[in-house]
Image (cartoon, rainbow, N blue to C red):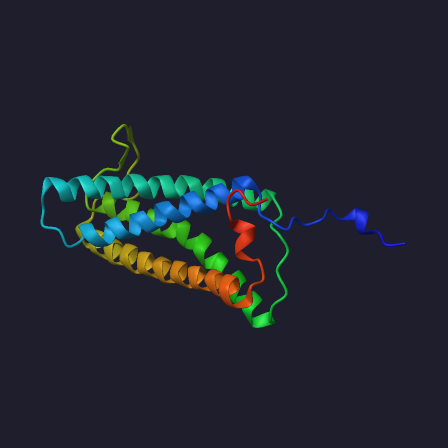
Length: 185
């Protein structure tokens, strides 16, 4: 007799909440990276200051959603891995772990940079957040560079993640992308 009833079955798709958090974070991260890239070359102006505030608000929101996503992920089993070569599974698991780490590191480095530069973070212009570090011009320069490097690393991993998902969908045709598609259950 097979005792498979002792273990819960793994869903073929991610849960609706996991899918919603995935796509909301994906959109916010892509917009935040784009705004960050665009605003960094603007001359000092009211538009640049407004974009910096929007970028900081997005960062804090991404950080908050990342906490929720991690809590959800830790308490809900994802679908089983699709059959694939071991190296692909290891690379996928490493990439997902690195993405999760960067979901936290990028906004935290940005918050620390803003604090070190002496610019407070006021979430949506309403909720003042505590300074992450004390104002320090030299530290601000280091944190600015760290934030940029981490953001570009995140952008590269996001591009790799998208490329792998598209490869699975169009080349392998293995249904992997359907597990994260909204409204397809």
